[in-house]
Image 1 (cartoon, rainbow, N blue to C red):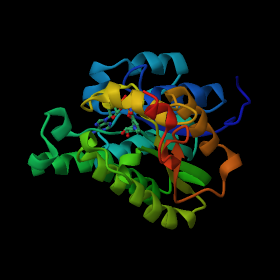
Image 2 (cartoon, rainbow, N blue to C red):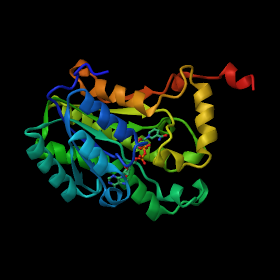
Image 3 (tube, rainbow, N blue to C red):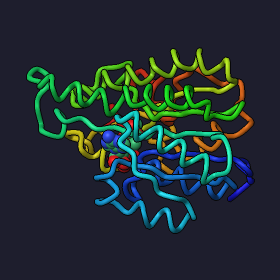
Length: 266
Ligand SMILES: NC(=O)c1ccc[n+]([C@@H]2O[C@H](COP(=O)([O-])OP(=O)(O)OC[C@H]3O[C@@H](n4cnc5c(N)ncnc54)[C@H](O)[C@@H]3O)[C@@H](O)[C@H]2O)c1
């Protein structure tokens, strides 16, 4: 159901790989709510996934950009402003990748070269995105920047490995850059989402068991990708103008639970 909450707004959405991606659902919901957007992903992902199909469906230009490359980001935000016809009102950073997780290295035997790459892709890219937007003065007043995070930034989830530190760094960048972007009346937040069945999510060891556990631990159950898209829409809308520098849990209540009778009953 559309309430035209984003009518007239221009957005850039990172991270839609396939129709399971959280960013895919966010892109669909934003357009449904009246926004015009550009879509972007790493060049390799453009070849693999179905993002072109999404672009056609949403009438959105797809612009390749490796989020770790400052030159790619400058080009992306320049072209996006031209295509969309003005400054950018909202940006979604939905990027995560860990080489150590992908290659099944245990936490006590991590390869540091890969760890640096993981931090660069999953967290430092968020700073690069914001720094580029800031320097280019590409965000509109009362614009909104959101990145997706996970509660492993605060608590220990052993199989999440070095992605935990990536998310802690990501959330810290949101607070620190949120301060500077406030001068331009732009807000910056992270949304800490429930486990969600996607390519990045399912890459974590024992994901299905963990998904089921979190579902039972959360009084409202796990939040779906569609529900996350709804939440992102509110964060991009004018109804949340004074929310900034926050990590916002979108997890069916998981983060405030201590023990769950539902789990004990089993
Ligand atoms: N799935 C979950 O359980 C879950 C839970 C909480 C938070 N998140 C976060 O949500 C975000 C989106 O992940 P998802 O679960 O939708 O999975 P996904 O695999 O669909 O999305 C991850 C995206 O990152 C992109 N990416 C990787 N390297 C890149 C680079 N160098 N430049 C640009 N893009 C690059 C991939 O191409 C892909 O589109 C991630 O930040 C993830 O950590 C996911």
